[in-house]
Picture 1: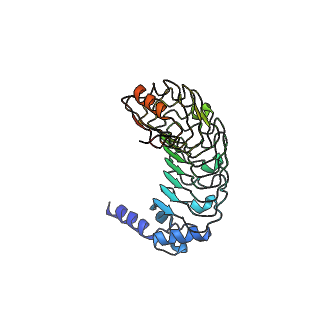
Picture 2: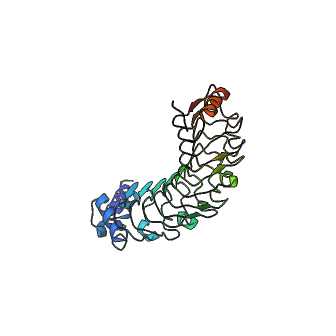
Picture 3: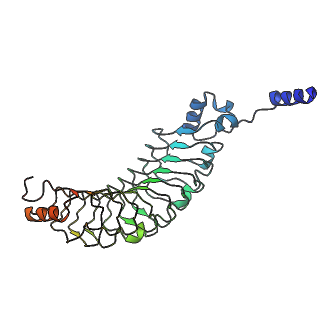
Length: 305
């Protein structure tokens, strides 16, 4: 028995270490890993890599990445890539990061979203793509991200979203599209993300809100549509929003509201209608029609609140 135990101990002590191939990776990646581990690149073992759960590659002037840069980093849960001039990321770049939960890629000069880039990231919960140069969201852009909870696409140059842009995101709860150039949303765009709780489409180019635009959002609690160019709201624009707690329509050009437009909302919903073009008479009628709602009407046309 003692002989067997001794043999196991000797095997552990004298087994050759498995060294990871770090030195041949992108210089900024190799340097960051070396700094985290506290070893030179040629001294880092696979065990060292397995011990890492976060990697910060932000502000590193990285212009390109390849999948081998992340080989062996199977336990990384958080990856920061923001503030790098990447422009484009190759398909399957993150295929070795099976445990990744958070990916931050704002201000990376990305011009497009390609679904194959995210292949293998089935555990990703947070994806930040804000402040890039993305113009179009094609169909199935995020089809591999079945666990995604939060998606931020704000401050891009998006003008068009395919009606199946968000197909497959059944766990999505927060979607931020503010500060883009979207002139119109097809209700079908939202049909596959019915569990959404927060939607921000403020600071776009919307001029109207059509009937049943948000009909899929039975669980939505916060809806932000401020600072668009909205002049017209259809009578059933907010149909289906039974759980809504906060609605911001301030900073538009709304001059009238159809009767009953807020009738399907919860009676204590907070609504912001400041800085629009409603007359004093219209403001008074709104207060009478929805006496239990907290409705802000300051700074409307010819009204002194």
